[in-house]
Amino acid sequence: MNKSNGVLMQFFHWYIPADGSLWKKAASEMKRISELGISALWLPPAFKGLAGADSVGYDIYDLYDLGEFDQKGSVRTKYGTKDEYLNAVNTASSLGVDIYADIVFNHKAGADYKERVWAQKVDWNNRQVELGNPRIIEAWTKFVFKGRIKFDKFGNITNYKYSDFLWDYLHFDGVDWDEKAKEKAIFKFEGHRETWEKMISSEKGNYDYLMFADIDFDISEVKDELKRWAKWFVEFTGVNGFRLDAIKHISLDFFNQWLDYIRSETGKELFTVGEYWNPHGLDILDKYIVESKHRMSLFDAPLQNRFHTASKQGSNFDLRTIFNDTLLSKHPTSCVTLVDNHDTQPLQALEAPVEYWFKPLAYALILLRQDGYPCVFYPDMYGAEYTDKGRDGNDYKIILNPVKELPKLLEARKKFAWGEQIDYFDHNNTIGWTRLCNENDNKSMAVILTNGTDGYKKMYVGKQFAGKQFVDLLNNRDEKILINEFGFGNFTVNAKSVSVWVN
Image 1 (cartoon, rainbow, N blue to C red):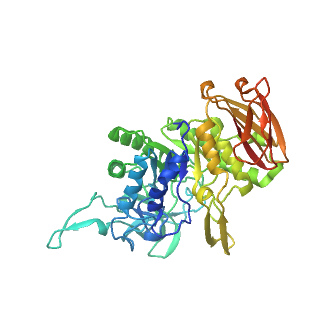
Image 2: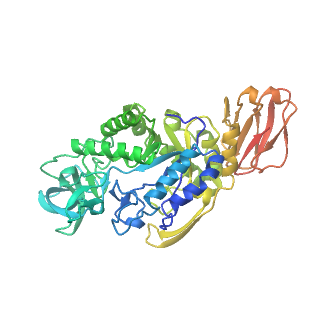
Image 3: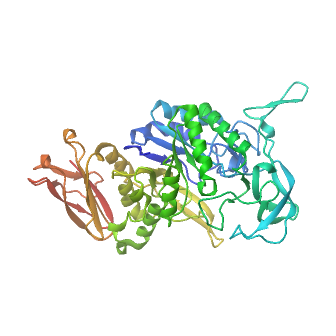
């Protein structure tokens, strides 16, 4: 599903301050965001997590608690309250901006009670290898959501707000902690569950298990509850789509059924992008899209990794190959392209940041071309500053500066990134392309970028511009380029930079 000239923005990063202000900031920034040409926001998980007001949202506890109930030590989430979330969604809707909700289905965390379960310990690096004999463990798997209980005047439970579905060990297939033995290991449940779910990914033998209490998607009542929840959530909040977390660990059959159900029930398109993070494996991403019959897009992890590599190698990287072995090259209408995200940013588990000098080039490559659905990252718009431990255990202070060219690149996408595209990928360090828009628009654009020294490239922008002058929208070059009688101009670029030439 291609979103035409729309732009998605990831409106958070991992280290957003836990002060409950993000939903309010989203609402207050919505008008500016819309004017920049951003057509959709991906908001972080809105649900109560194990860490309560400090939870980034991926340690999911209660899907029905959007910052409404006193659970896990707080009413609000890290990002704000239920009413503030709903206000942000409504504000976006009034301005024509879609909201994509981050959905975490793979696991649940922070169970209220532990249960005795027969389980088999398995190898951490190959979950098909069993270690020792099955034994009874104490697993944190019983969720009762005390904050949502409604009582009568006599103190008796009458019902649960929104849903009375309670989770227990029968709804999970494994955990990573035995409370009885105080042991950290992966335990596959026995009895009701003999094997892991069938996964597309064969990493670690079978990558069904990721973390916490792993939800069992072979259980019909689990699937039914998640369908009921999705219908409630879309109707309750008014969101327009989803970002699905950790889909490599969840049965694709479930998502095919789930998406068909929720789209049918709500009558909404519900654009969906899945996070299947495999930066070096195009084949598995291709297989997922084909077997999902394009029900969802995927993030182009291989392209993000190539941006990371190109930024590290500098002029040694052949820019003509920048799109090789990427999802964009294979499924241009079913991929979301990005420069960085909360997992690749410095000090995170999948750390692979794009160096600052290359970010304007990378954003030009995803924003100003005809294929893909580009995603802008919060720190690249607003900046970020935080401290955390690195892999060596030491504390590091990270400062991420805004990409100063980004607002102009967004303007160029909105005004000029239309119509026919002509590529000039004919030099290992300097590449370019033009967008001819429509003849009646009297617009054209030439983009040139280099990871080497100053460069130039002769490119066609249209005979109708003969004798006219083009200027660099980014103001990196201050000269004017004269278009010759055949519609060509000799467009220039500074070393390790990008220029966007427009009439």
